[in-house]
Length: 68
Length: 256
Ligand SMILES: [Zn+2]
Image (tube, rainbow over all chains, first blue to last red; front, side, top):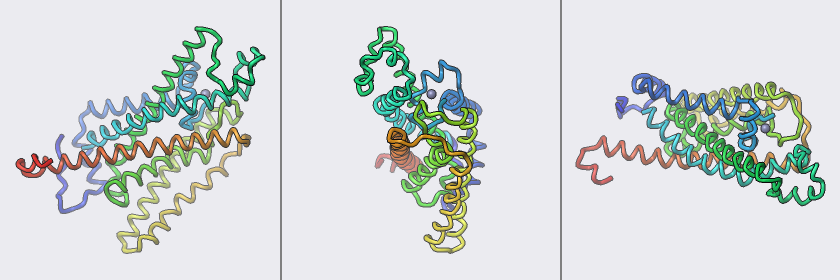
């Protein structure tokens, strides 16, 4: 985990963070994170198959996500 | 460093997700069941006839047989997992967003965590609910695709409004304006969100049950974000302390 070297004297900016993210992340981390978010989003928000819908119906309604 | 923030977000999301899963199982599910019963979705009960009145308040009376009891148990488990997943999703999203936006969020330390949490709640739930209010099952509305699209558009509008609000506040305070002036100006993009309900036709659904349902859903998300941000703030503080001791002279590391 390489510490992005912003000088301590200067407060970091959003641009610093974006630059640091581009160098510090491994491809595996990006793939894992993307897969997790995409999978959860698909299951919770988009999957409409009756079986999936039936099993997540209450959770969706509780979260105020649109459901049938 | 982003990975550390994302991990903190996931951990906080797990804590909040467990709480939300319990909320789904103990509070929301019974309420959804009542709403479905009112709407006559539970045909088994309707056909059963005799005890419908009692069944309404004692919804545990899924005593139709071993098969339906096990499907009910399975659906409880999947809904618990769904609640946990919702917490994880929000937590991960929050951790990543906080990593990028931390330098721009007004306030410092815990305050900035809670402020971004409020923006998250507004983006993910608040703005979309202005366009598509949470409906208990059985209340007919627009087709699912239409509502999903509106939800997504309102979510994007909420995110844009929050970003614009934060950017405006930052510009004005660095330009030397007073905090109150800057905060007032920053409230304008958020106020624009109030136009959202006008963009979609109102759906039927007044009545005490709908109101109670919306109150419960709102309380659930507010609670979820409170737990999420509290846990994240604590983990973040701990992480910063650890970084500081690691960066300091090795002899100081014992001071913890
Ligand atoms: Zn549903």
